[in-house]
Length: 152
Image 1 (cartoon, rainbow, N blue to C red):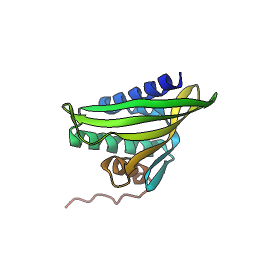
Image 2: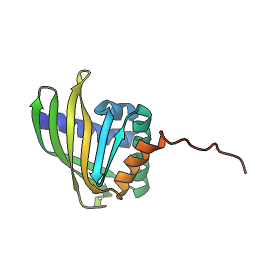
Image 3: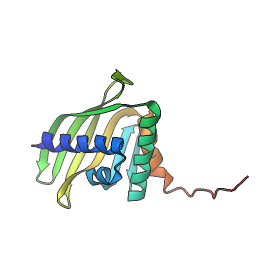
Image 4: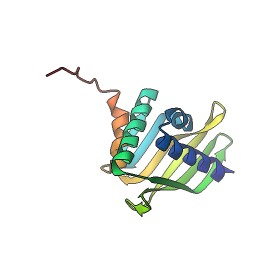
């Protein structure tokens, strides 16, 4: 059952990116959300930050021409009635061609407000990878004051 729950969330998240459906994405993840890579950890504490991360990640997918975003659950276990730990592989394709080697992700899911949500993820990617930068951008942009635009 844990594998099915997690795979459903993975499918929902992938579809949300391609369909630009932030509501579906937001319902699959929980704020606060801890996102870590090799060498860095981000904590997304607001829905505005989550939206910024979502938009940045979609932008990177689109910029690379990703046509298929595959996430497959490789394992999941129920720890308590309200907590699951799980893992999956992530792969990015453009017209059937792999853009990079698949990488592993470990996640924690919690049953919150009547639904399962991902509360944290550990990604086996370098902190300088484009995926990490996209998500990190969202975690930091909303907390950083932006200068007013001026006409030139």
